[in-house]
Amino acid sequence: MAEIFKAYDIRGIYGESLTDDIAFKIGRAIFTFLGCKKVVIGRDMRPHSQPLFDAFARGLTLHGADVVDLGLCSTPMSYFANRLLGADASVMITASHNPGPWNGFKICRNNATPISGATGIMDIKRIVQEEDFAPTAPAKGAITTYDIVPAYAEHFRQFADIRHPLNILMDYANAMGIVEAKTFDGLFQITPLFDTLDGTFPNHEANPLDTSTLAAAQEAVRKGKYDFAACFDGDADRVGFLDEKGDIIPMDMITALIAKMVLAKNPGANIFYDLRSSWAVKEVILENGGIPNQSRVGHAFIKAQMREKDAIFAGELSGHYYFKENSFAESSALAVIFIANLVSQSDKPLSELVAPMQRYFASGEINSTVADSLLVFDKLRSKYADADKMELDGLSFEYPTWWFNVRRSNTEPLVRLNLEAKTKAEMEAKRDEVLAIIRS
Image (cartoon, rainbow, N blue to C red):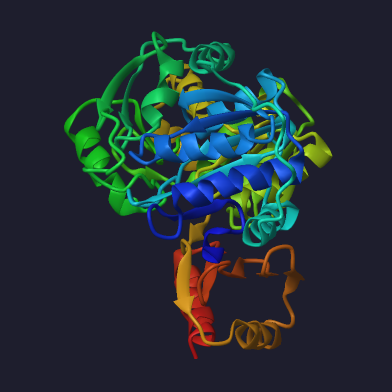
């Protein structure tokens, strides 16, 4: 059971490491940890999300907490409901992009403030393991239902400014993007792919960061005539984009595009981007009058930093796009709306709008299995002692014409490398040079 408590959420294989009984105990533990009186709970389409909800809610109501059942919704909708309904906490029952047998819980305090390993998940783990629960209440809490979809859709539709008709392909991967996309009703034409909810993911894994999962959408775009494609992950808190040619748009380039649009109406605003992002993201933010801020990788870190600086937007290389308008949390619907606005207001296709921002050459994230990551980091410090260094998240080394970041995985014996250079030849040479040190 201990292995289900992760750095950012609780996640395991249903019926093995995660059972209804454990969900019941986690519900009790969350009440014990937070003392929450009102909790909103949403869930994805996996067949075991309903029994997990039933057990989890039973644990909460045993202590007198009231539960608002959001039913089937996206993770961004659960964050929105947290603030809108004045909840003390919110929980989304999902395993995001993990395969069908997996499930889990994404937990927030009030105002959609995430609870991570460092801010509560390890405390919840201890309470569950020791069964150190608060006393039960004389009267159980109530369970009521609330359909969050109409309010969420109405709120984010107000940001739409579509100037000419669009036809957008959307790959829902049989997952919660189907519900998230109700925000778009009537805004533009949608051609759907895999638009039946099915928690077994019969067509492909719901993970746009894995480019192999985009093949069906790429094929469809290349056969048809679309302005672009949007491809959602399992709980719709991430979205990937293809241009009108079916080519994959790097997710940091979407960060740059949205930043440019946001800054047009909010000059001088703080924008965050994760430290794996291209130099071009910082440059675009500066060129458009914004204040660029690098962040650590991981939604809990980014949201905390956004709150500290009252940032209006942040983008992460994994396809998370965060907006102050959703309590500094993700809204994949709003990301799609901004890209739709951009394309509809231009006489250029999306590929040409992205092109000026693709100024450098990136390696992409490369994983290496290592026996001793600390030794690897020491070797890199020694080899690149003359670089500008930063230790915000792993190690970052910067030179005038190239840079790289290395990070340890939270869960596996892996070192992750991201590298970028001004020329393709230098990127490839430096990538191979750094990998040789990592893998030696």
